[in-house]
Amino acid sequence: MTSVAVIGAGVTGVTTAYALLEHGYDVTVIDRERYAAMGTSFANGGQLSASNAEVWTHLGTIVKGLSWMFRADAPLLVNPWPSWHKYSWFVEFLKNTSSYQQNTIETAKMALAARKHLLSMAEAEEIEFDLVEKGILHIYSDRKSFEHAADVTKMLNEAGLERTAVTNEEIRCLEPALCGEFYGGYYTPSDFTGDIHKFTRGLAEACERKGATFLFQSDVESVTTMGEKVELCIRSKGADKAAPTLFDKAVVCAGTGSKQMAAKVGEKINIYPVKGYSITVNLNSEASRQSAPWVSLLDDDAKIVTSRLGENRFRVAGTAEFNGYNQDVRSDRINPLVGWVERHFPNVDTDDVISWSGLRPMMPNMMPRVGKGKQPGIYYNTGHGHLGWTLSAFTAQIICGMINQK
Ligand SMILES: Cc1cc2nc3c(=O)[nH]c(=O)nc-3n(C[C@H](O)[C@H](O)[C@H](O)COP(=O)(O)OP(=O)(O)OC[C@H]3O[C@@H](n4cnc5c(N)ncnc54)[C@H](O)[C@@H]3O)c2cc1C
Image (cartoon, rainbow, N blue to C red):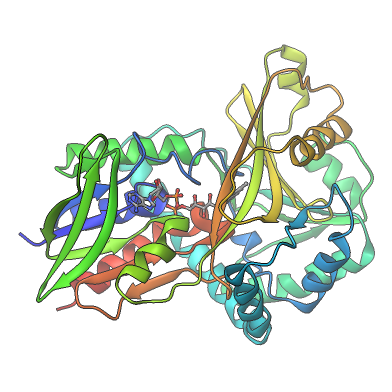
């Protein structure tokens, strides 16, 4: 049986492992954490959002981003301290404005294709992950952004996604809990939400039942190709030195660690860790539960996304911070999220809020890197940026298909 190592047990690694097991491979998943889904796949925005497929490489978005750089509570924060990684990434990002339209359409197509795979995995393995199928409502506070949304909608339509413009009154009908005046909105009934952590943990358990080996608290220190084989040097927690282990193939699904992993085999994968924050508001009182929304929201002005995770939890996420691999949870980034909840849902208590930060593994063209590496036996399924939860069920199938090709 062909042995495949999957490096990383986040959502991309575990969906890849599952797809490989379905095709009869001998799968070993390696992660430095103690459990699956402890990295970026821990507490994200929860949206499975084809409607959020627009890539950020648009001139208007870049101009808006620059204006935000001087506002302390803005959704974008760039640490100006010089770093070759950051500035080279920005240069590549700017070069990709020409593929904005093509990449947006391609992303929307992938997101649409991912839906059925994700739902069928959850159904087959009976994974409970607080799935809420009530659509995603984008809200816009000014005419300019609403008109831009109309242009984006044309691209999404081209990819096969239906979303409808809604008035302020229709917004109120769709989500009565939401307070505020908006210029307008766009509603995508077919999008949905769920808890990425619960899903990934449930799928990891299913992989184990199907025969996968999980090596947790194990760091992949090096990757080397040895003829037809791939050698990984894996150091388990507490071990004096790394143990070399041979596999037929290896798939890099290491999130923001994929850049370093690729460099070990002489490849450049320019993933930048774009930090984001989330809060999970525990809805402890009946009044809070009644006053929190069920329809998932994307506030275009604040760049905030929300998901209702079952009766008792409300997840709110946002911010893009370019600050290297630093994962400190900063109160000046968390406070705007809490303030946003208090403004739009004044009857939701915010006395029990769990804060988190995560690093989006972002490619400069905003497209995941899915494919064969330059070295034999090495594959990549990584760099899913702000849409890893939305896309990975599909990219796992793609990479598995490539490995299957003789
Ligand atoms: C605030 C925020 C909100 C978001 N909201 C959404 C959303 O609403 N919808 C959506 O689709 N996406 C969203 N995302 C993006 C999504 O969460 C990520 O794209 C996705 O979780 C990335 O998964 P991954 O498997 O690539 O990375 P990870 O989950 O980080 O997994 C990578 C794993 O690799 C392991 N690893 C790395 N290097 C090594 C090594 N050398 N040895 C061993 N193990 C290693 C790490 O320990 C980690 O567990 C959001 C992200 C953030 C930060």
